[in-house]
Image 1 (tube, rainbow, N blue to C red):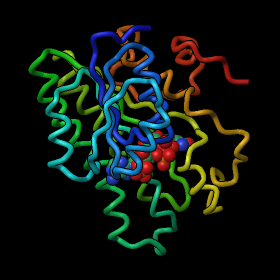
Image 2 (image 1 turned 90 degrees about the horizontal axis):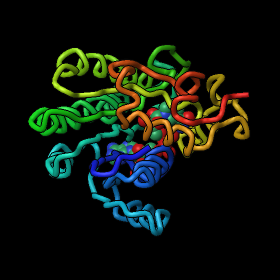
Image 3 (image 1 turned 180 degrees about the vertical axis):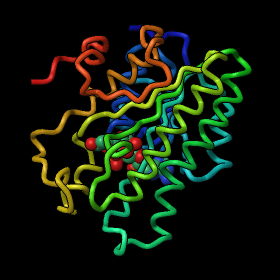
Image 4 (image 1 turned 120 degrees about the horizontal axis):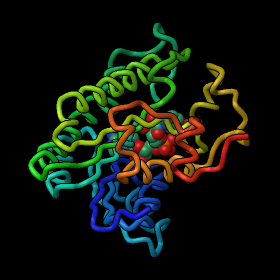
Length: 247
Ligand SMILES: NC(=O)c1ccc[n+]([C@@H]2O[C@H](COP(=O)([O-])OP(=O)(O)OC[C@H]3O[C@@H](n4cnc5c(N)ncnc54)[C@H](OP(=O)(O)O)[C@@H]3O)[C@@H](O)[C@H]2O)c1
């Protein structure tokens, strides 16, 4: 797998699946950039990355100007990874403001990043976008109405981009990473609100697994899957991306 000569941006690349994706893309030879929303998180990520070359940018996903400044560097690959699980709560227990913040972070900001990235990709004749999806895009979970609605919207954005720009060399994928051992799952376990929150930590996948599949999606080998919502638990995808079969 080689991505040498390609430039990539991972949003929310300072921890969890995003950080593992920064590593995987860099190890595949890409020139990798990532965003983090605080200087402390940026510095911590650079420490975690050690010798792995990656350029961090301070940008909140919801700050259109800061994100445009980064995206105007022009990337071959965009991984829309940054997202929040909050607010967790049944519909009568969450505020409309918190719901809107979730949609702004998980959906509208991904739209803005996609739009800005696309202007450069279309001008260059091609590019790859990976939208990090979730099983929640297709199946409601109690207490996650904002997260589910945002991810469902993101899945439709994936299909819309494919419809409108697929013929102009834009490869876009929705990718559900499975249930992964990150801080997001710590918050989910603390809530105890639905079956996902009761999954034991030992049953969760390491972030390196989805990261390896994301890097594979950025290669030409994944061309036939463009425009689709994919799941790391697919045996075919795992085999193609070099991941071990699930037990
Ligand atoms: N973990 C799972 O089981 C799972 C399952 C399905 C889908 N996903 C999806 O996978 C992706 C990564 O999740 P994760 O588990 O790695 O989550 P995580 O550990 O909570 O990390 C989320 C990342 O997004 C960043 N982020 C959130 N809001 C942001 C904002 N406004 N601006 C900039 N960055 C922001 C966070 O930055 P801070 O460090 O500053 O908070 C962090 O870097 C998400 O799209 C998530 O929905 C995860």
